[in-house]
Amino acid sequence: MKYILTFYFGLISCSSAFSQSLFTLQEVVDSLPFQVIVQSGKLAISFAGPEHRKLRYLTVDNLYLSDADLLLEYHPHGIPKTLELQPLIELREASGRLIQIGQSSLSSDQALSVKTPVAGRIVWLDATETALELGAYTLLIHQRLRGAVECAGKRPEFSIKQQLPYYGVAAAGLVFSGLGLIFNAQKKDSYNNYRNVWANEGQKTDADGYLADAKNLEKRAEVFMYGGLAVLGANAGFYTWRRIRVRHRQHLYDTYCTSQTKTSLKIEPVLDWWRNGPVAGVRIGINGK
Image 1: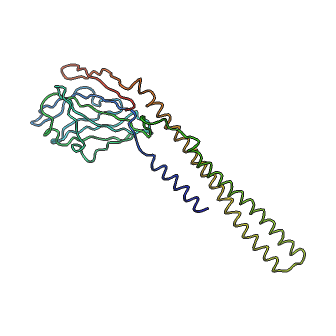
Image 2: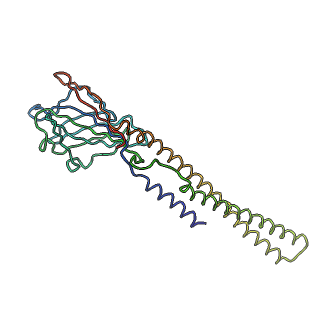
Image 3: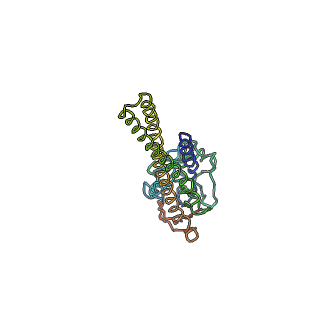
């Protein structure tokens, strides 16, 4: 029984370990216009609007230059607890040319995946030496929601075939519990025989034999009975956990994946304020990519 329990719990642990892959469920791109200016003899960032710019899933706390690096500080909001946010950035020049920023240009301490309400920052190393000059730019902030379901795959399910191992373990638990009941009944018979020997003034050696059998049967009954009940309880718990987890993944799939053909691309106008007046921009949303 010890080996059966060890194998079973090991199988469950491995199943849980391999289920942590995250996939992109939704991607929203917000634009943050800014200017690079000279302030006190140094390059600096200037952008108008609220002090804290609220995007779809991020609130920009600060955007500034530190030596040659560009730093974007933020904190997430409105993210379901079971999902993670992966923020990425691109730069668009006034001419419309896009500058993609590779991972090698980002600080190694950047937290790409964050969970609400943890704050984070993106550091673009040597930005003023490689791309930024005096002038107007737009920072494109990609906000990717990631979860444990892949839209390109099938809808998660808990099929009969997947449930069979749990039924097998439950059957084993019932067998162990049944053997425990049988040993318990045999134990009672041995105790009765032990009492009958003394009641009929039988031999001590006969009585001791029945007593030893009763004690051995009692130990077996306890091991199989409680072991079987433990297997049944653990199996029921893991079965319930698995079913709840699949239902949660089905909910994610139905929410972010099944509607992607209808809302795969969403464009919203955004009005940003500069010192000299309003500037129009756009917000692009992509679901299930």
